[in-house]
Amino acid sequence: MGKSAKAFKRPTKKQKEIKKTTKAQAALTPAADKERPSSMARTSSGGVSKSKSIRKKAKVASVMTRASKAKKRRMASEMNIAGLLVLTVLLFAVPGLAAPGVIDDIYDWVFSGAMLSEPRSSVAATSVGNIALFAGGRLQNGSYSDVVDIYNRKSKTWTVSRLSVARSEIGAGSVGNRYALFAGGFDSSFKPMTLVDVFDAQTGQWSQIQLNTPRAAPRLLDLGSVVAVVGGLSGDLQYLSKAVDYVDANLTVHSTSLPSEYPQLGLPIFDSTSGIGLYTAGYQNSRPGERFNDFEPSNQTTIFAAASASLVAGPLFPYPRWGSGGAAANGMFVVGGGHMFGDGSSEPLTTVTDRADVFHAQTQQWGQALTLSVPRDYPLVQTVGDYVVFLAGTQATKALDIFDSRTGTFIVNPRHTPALYTLRDDAAAVTVDGCLLMVAGGTVYQGRNATASVEIFDACKS
Image (cartoon, rainbow, N blue to C red):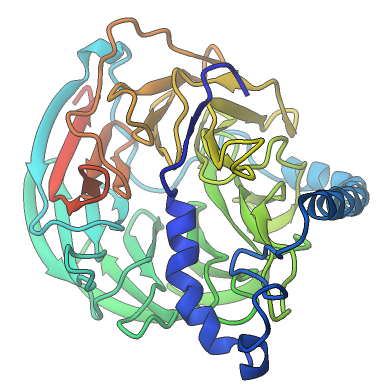
């Protein structure tokens, strides 16, 4: 971690998530365990009230054991990874219309603003063809929304539609350059769902399909002719899911599971140039199926191949932490920002990092770490042409961090533009046609108010 790491004690998004799920987990805990003395009770994040020295020794032993197991798995899968990527077409292209050209000079990107039909946070966003869709989310009063705001890049017009059920923590993605999928989520009773609302961009009609495993906050990995609905919050004692539901361009669902040792809520990143996707970083439950969860940052990586729709375990993520974000361009997968927890005395309670790790599809390895201009926590990250763009996730600057995949470096940007107009958290971001970057909704004023504002960065040549 560089000197620019910033320490603070404001509760993080992850801490809020853990607090939010305490009630749901308590309902699953046997009454006998609820009545245990507080000195023996395990917290919802997996901590136990022991002395610091015992906890640190146990953690070190646990990490060493997992590292040994992971090394064996990695060695066993190296040949599988090599064989898998040989089958992958190196210049794989997502079916459908070719993306328009991208303005290369970032200072020439055109900024504009718009408004969603209602203010909300935790919005699910995806694009299909020339259309961006912003669905569901959480309203100011805490209730869930069924609204879908739809923006057409060609006509520059907005329309409003509805999900079949109001919900939040939805996974969003697209398949076959025709269908936008809004998968899973929490219903009004805080139960994970199997429901997938499907929008047909050709007809403008909605339909519904079902996942094989109910989940909230699943991660959707767009692989062109198929989309993988990966992981999510399971709502049971395991808490995190290892389920993978593939949805093809005919909207047929078939299932498998992650090859990782522990259930993981990671980052889904796809690169159309190399034709592979990564599911990496995030956090895992190291005590799945037990009465008490043990959440910790995950170093697990799974590689998805678009050409063969198969998946294998990949090289370990080198610097596990909570709250990172990532995207890919030209075979370079960039994962940046995030935070670590400390004990609050000898270490800061929460430390946000400026570190960015890069996975190279050509070598199938993580490379040397880079540095963001500022530490960012839960940044929004999108691909715009050859660039990987980091937004938000900090109160220090409204400027963007822009990684150029052609040089393998972040652009030095003394003018601090392009930049956000409004600092926000828990927002949605999506790129349309590979060139129009949109940031929508979220909370402002340090989480006090939901916003309807949309910020648009237009890098399209046509």
